[in-house]
Image (cartoon, rainbow, N blue to C red; front, side, top):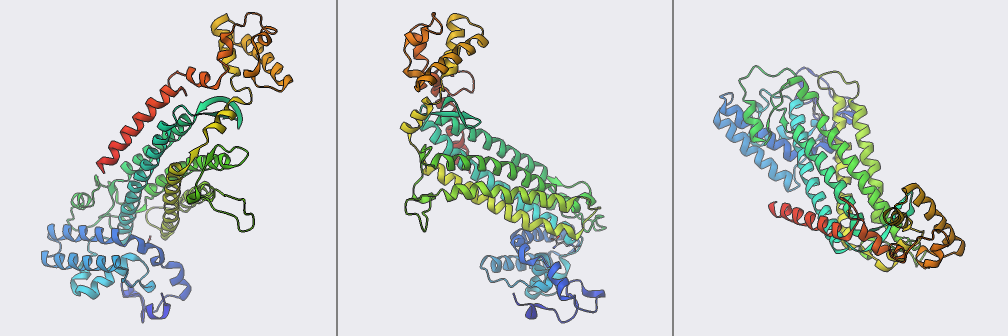
Length: 474
Ligand code: ARG
């Protein structure tokens, strides 16, 4: 937007009563938020319509004026949606741009809209409405990701892969079980968003600048019209609170951290060294110099987004730290970081959902890897405990010697014979060899939450059913 055409002739036309000169150029530049808060236009208009209706119902403005205000606001909404609304930097922010445009459209009654309200309660309301919409959208997107994971988990309830600790082969697990771990994490993420939403859902509108108002407003009516549970209880808190944005960013940071872990696993699994999965051309890119390359860029970028999101949380936390009550202009810095963080989050979730649907495990490679690294040693130790009643510590020691024997020969445990085992513990029987297979290993993990395919199938089915039902409801 060009500054010259925007610049008001003298002082700001919305609040310039006692100002005689224009702001310094740099003042306008640092002060104006229209460049980014125009994103709140829909919410701003929604809030203003509710406010105008309430003012009329309470007899503070006439019904006729309210009607013209609401119609004028609807017209602006149309202009915003059509992308033809002209934003002026000299008018600072979305609130004053909308009000000024309303004046162009309907004339004098526009000046009555700001009765019993301030930009302080207005921006708090707009921003809450925006964050609330985003929470709902993020929740839905996370539900889609969970469903993709749960469906893939059901299909691969018995697909064996190595389970790792310290990124060293630990015990075999199933691919379905691994995916369901993320379904659980995302379930907690959705819970955190839901908690934030529940606390957010009080309406600041009507707190006015900071002290409330002398007009007989009905804050319960505006709260209800904007789908809030109730009005906020303290006017000072109403205009100075940004907890709702912080909580949402905190929840998004944790959720993005989860996405980054999964994205990292996709990156690792995609390496030729692991080769656990394939991703199609849809989510990979080539190299401009190395013809053989297939790079998991979408996973890498999803992994990276947590930096911006957690950074936004820190940024807003530091903006709010030490601010005295009530509103300070510092708080205008709440928006850009929140917009950017939640946009980034939405992108990362969508990319992850796409990748989950796209990726195919290479069952043969995973199975072979699952059997390497003596991954069933614990099963052998458990056999000694169960069948020979050895204390676990002794069983651990005996099994350690078995592993050492295999290691010395350069073979896996499954390659050892009963005779080999007997050289270490003469009471070994043939059935001890059975527990060394990766399939029998996972099958035996039937404890609650364990990786046995029957458990995984049941859990995955339960999730799919629940998530499909929830998706039907929207
Ligand atoms: N643009 C401002 C913001 O985003 C709106 C509130 C301005 N309030 C004020 N008293 N100057 O925070």
